[in-house]
Length: 103
Image 1 (tube, rainbow, N blue to C red):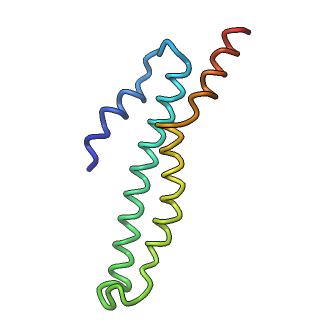
Image 2 (cartoon, one colour):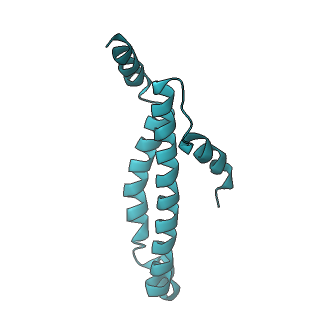
């Protein structure tokens, strides 16, 4: 399951010293996102299984499929975390590195 993400996780979770602190912060955010993604997928799979055995196999989607609400709310948070890890926060990281270099 999601084996294509494992190289990123291993790369960013290694204990190797990275020369730039900004790269280290970005790598840690990416590794954190991947851990949260695994938790999101695993927990939601369990919730859908519980729903199926409690309601879904009897009524199908005629009733409220409550795992959709959990997935939607948590998915918004995951989308924001993804944007922060892969596309955001670079300016803040560069500022932090320059401030540390000046100190």
